[in-house]
Image 1 (cartoon, rainbow, N blue to C red):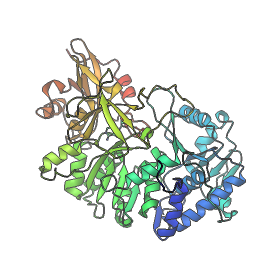
Image 2 (tube, rainbow, N blue to C red):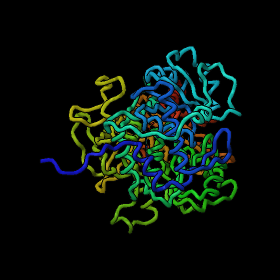
Image 3 (cartoon, rainbow, N blue to C red):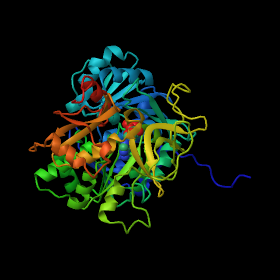
Image 4 (tube, protein in one colour):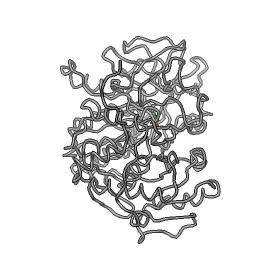
Length: 543
Ligand code: AMP
């Protein structure tokens, strides 16, 4: 027997309508290429999204068509999010930091019809142009005054496009499983793979994310999404902020600039900031060097890569900011696990709380987690056993775009294999030990490169650390620690190796240390282990 409840579809446009009605006066502040501090309200944002939806119709775009963005985090990008998905098209967000070959691949693979681009990516697109012949036109995210001369065909100025349209627009109603957005994984091997979100998954993910033990977002919050709108929909913040009425502060092209982030946080009274560890390194470094303390900030959500213990400690002890780690992937929308203190654990010492905070987090309701061994048998949640992390839920991808059935990332019983290796403790806290392919196997036992990196990062002389397995005649592989020294410190190899004593098992301690000027990063800020391994391909441990 079915229940007797309404079956209204979970559409992204309903979030825009809700924001307009209940949070119309709430501000959205942006740093953009043509305005150092643009501000307007959610009401104006949704009004302009409706104008844009009209413009998309006039451009001849049909339901399901992919429309790409190559842009930083700002109000115009947000308008595109709502207009494109709300009108039934698919918003394909592109990471501009990808290599040109990858950009060409994904634009062609997605069959993008139009591309919305920030001013600064116009020259990049001009270079790609001969290789993306199916793109019909380009919209440059600026006003007439700043519109550049360009060889891009059908180049339109965004503000001119909007000015010609009416703000009257009825958001269409359709099946909530209709595709809404497309994001390609940065993939360190092979071609990038497209994850195709739908309205239902997006709205459910936003619902889940605002809960107190997840992001804990309220209308009184001021959120700073430093995580890019092209990286898994900025972790859903464009949706959850409008759902709750939290003020948004978009950093535009300034996301890697510690000073600019500090100024934005202070002047706009940011309470919650979200981003990958590398951006927080820049912010903390700036604060350290200039004796600055963040006053309004209450919480940072950090994910996308392992978060060093020292970072969580510095946020907590110097700035009184709760640094909550989260785990997720492009394939999981992305929120899968978030680390908040569970009832019953309040009595832990500060040090024990820090240890706990270095774990990726507890599974969020809606994203089931399990760990399995090589045979696919489930492993115990004892905090010791480690195995392949698999997930399942309504905002986890069921396949990749145009690769249906071919990617082999799902198990026969319907779980998605994340490619991460993890432990889960009896309280349900999951900790990532490695990517499957980054695991170091020494004498038949696994060593966690992430734990070694985190430990090294706790030394004040280390700015960044990467650990890779290098062939060893006796142990098959041994860990090599690759370090970028912190400015003004000249830490030695022996000092670093001694630092590990008592912090990890003796046989985990790296066999050697190499110093480099910088580590290679992926387009989303993770250490690019493949390139690091290539860089040290000829390396041999000292006798
Ligand atoms: P992406 O799809 O680019 O967001 O990358 C997802 C991958 O980032 C995951 O599969 C993990 O390997 C890594 N990752 C995300 N969050 C964490 C975390 N808290 N700790 C360690 N690795 C993480």
